Structure formats: structure tokens, C-alpha cells
Image (cartoon, rainbow, N blue to C red; front, side, top):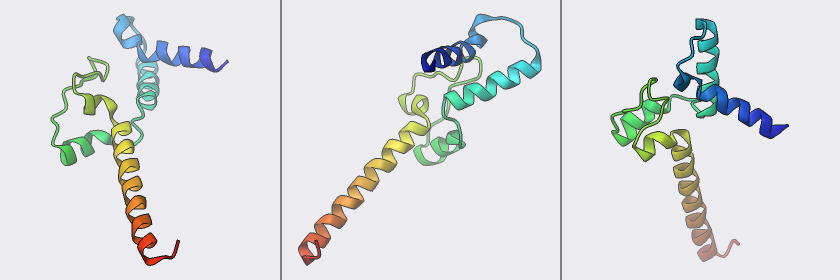
Length: 103
């Protein structure tokens, strides 16, 4: 059942490449589903432009795909950076408390 749902989402995400005419309300719903499938829950484009200094090259015509790895990863890139920073912070706290003999 889950695989059929994922297959349906894949079909919806790739419908703009099929050059089939759809009503505007259907295109709006498809764009919402595409944004959810690409994990564009928060405005990652703004974060990429300000923090990383990337000029975004992906457009709606290209389906959100680009040649830039960081741009294609979107929210996942910032999630990985956050997890790595959190792990580094926890490691440093562990080392600091180990010297104090609390742990």
C-alpha cells in the first residue's frame, strides 16, 4: 500500500515533464504536492542564498532539479549540518564533563 502511494507521488511530481494540459486548480495542487515531496516546508531558498551565498539556478521549468548538489539537497543539507553540529557539541560537552569527573 505504501509503495503504491509513493508511486502515485512520483507520477504527480513528474507530470510537468509530460506536457499534458491540466486545469489551473489541478496544477496548483500538483505544485503543493511537489513542494511537499521536495521537503520545501520552510523557505530553504532564502537560507541557501544568505548563508551559503548560492545563486539558485533551478526553475519551475526544470522541475526543481539543478546541477548544484547543495541546491538539490535543500532542507536535507541543513538537517545534516544541524545533526553534525549537534554531535560535535555533545562530544565537546562529554569531554568537558569527563575532565570534571561528573560523568
